[in-house]
Image (cartoon, rainbow, N blue to C red; front, top):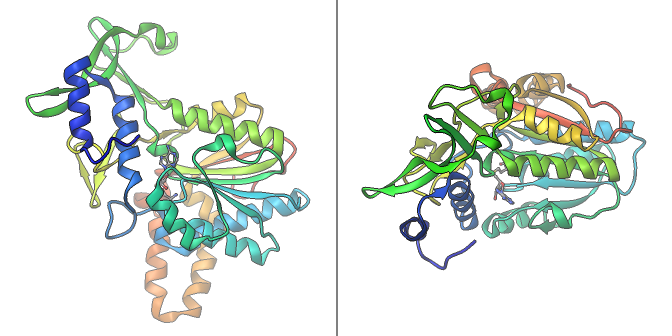
Length: 350
Ligand code: SAH
C-alpha cells in the first residue's frame, strides 16, 4: 500500500499514537511492500545478493530439473513457467535458456508486486506476463513453478509467552524508537496444545502468507498438473524463537530501526510448508539442503566445463560454486522443497 511520499515510519508512528501498537505482521508486511515497491535491492550495489545473482549455474540447473521432470511426465505441450518474486529476472532467463536446449519453451508468468522490479524483469524476459498474486494465474495447463527467496519476505506473526499467558508480538513506539512489545489480548487459544508448555519469554513464529502461497501452489498442481521448486533459507523441523532479520547494504541491521528501508526476512518453516502442500493432496518430493540438491544435479561438472571453456574465469566460477553449495555458505541453511502433482514423476535430486 502506498501512502504518497510520506516515510513509512511517520505512518506507523501516527497509527500507533492513535490506536496503540500494531502487530508485527502488519509492520513487516507494510515495510516490505514499501521496501520492494521502489527499488532494486539485489546485487553488490544493493542490500543483499541471491543465488541466481551469484552464478548462472543456479538458474541453469533449475531449468534442467524442470525440463527433466517435464520430459518424464510425457512432454505436455501447454505447460507454463511460473515464477514467484523473480527479482531481476536472472533465474528465469538462465532457466529458460537451459530448458530451450531440452526442447522446452513454455509461456512465462511472473508473480511480482514491485513496479521497479517488473521494469527490470521486462528487460530480462520480455515475453513474460505479470500478475500481482497467484489468484489470476491461468487455471488450465500444467505449471513448472519456481520461487527463490520469495517466502522469506512474507510477513510473520509471532506469539510470545508472558507470565499472563500467550500474547501476540506487537510493535510500539517508545522514546523515539520502534520496539517489540507483548500485546494485551490473550492469544492462548491460538497456540496448539502440544507447544503450550513453554517457559516465559518463549516465542513461536508462523507465516500465514507462506502457508497460503504453498497451499495455493499445491492446489493448482493437483488440479492443473506440474511441479514446483521453492528455495529459501529455512529449517525443516519445528523450532521456536524469532528469526526476523533486516539487511541493508549487506549488513544486518535492527529490524525496527528503518521500516521500509531495509529488507525484512524470516527463515521459512519448511515442515509447515510441507504440511500445507500435503493438505491439498500434492506430492511432497522432499526438502533437501541446497548444496545436496545442486551437487546431485551436477553443479561440479558444470563448473568444470564452464571453467574449461573460459580458463581466465576458472577461479571465479569455482568460488561462485562454493558460495552456492559450501556448508558455511548457502549450501546447508538454504533448502529446496520439491512438490509435484500426484500423477507426475519423482524429481531428480530428492
Ligand atoms: N527471486 C529473486 C528475488 C528475491 S527478492 C532472486 O532470487 O534474486 C523477493 C522477490 O519477491 C522480489 O522480486 C519482490 O519484489 C518479490 N515479493 C516480495 N513480496 C512479495 C509479495 N507479497 N507479492 C509479490 N511479490 C513479492
